[in-house]
Image 1: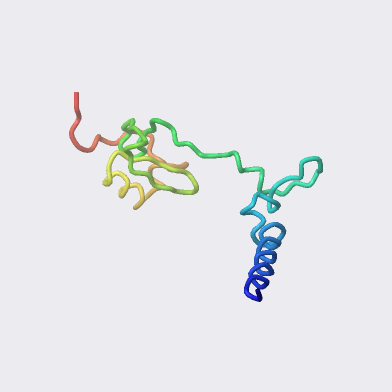
Image 2: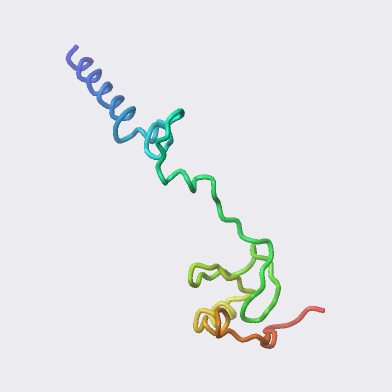
Length: 118
């Protein structure tokens, strides 16, 4: 009987903690959710619906090829994602990104790397 009583006490404590305390977010209560009728709102809910989706195609800043981003080699520079046709183009970009983006970037397109399919 004592074991059942202790089990019941622990079950109530765990339920109260999950409902109102540390585990409230697991049960869908509190922590960043706005109240239904109230004006209370935390900053966390502002970006819940946002999701970044990459473009279908992009231009390789090193060689100028138009590439499909699902097969491309990405790299991040200054908070922007750049896509590359090959590992070599990505490595050239990462070695000196200021040559390919920004105010000092080259305006002419360098010669294509690799074989061209006509």
